[in-house]
Image 1: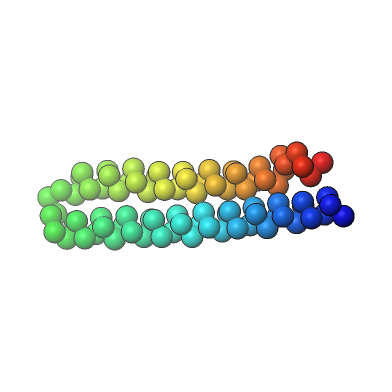
Image 2: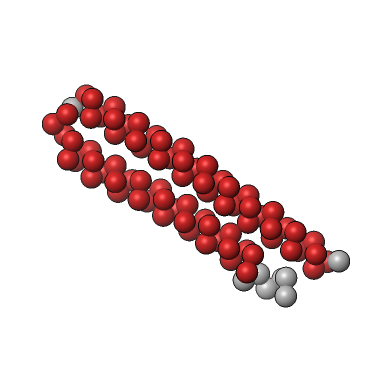
Length: 83
């Protein structure tokens, strides 16, 4: 019975972690992209710099989401309390 509670807690924790990572990455990507469009509308001549900074920012945001999914998978498959 105690093992079933640990498995259920790991499943719930992994689901919440992956879900919040996806929502956070979506919000972050939307904010970065909106600021890019806003900056491009204000200064079209700064397109190269703005685009480079936008790609770096989106890459870092997505990397954090991927790391969170890896942590969620670790909670499921590498949990020493479940075995």
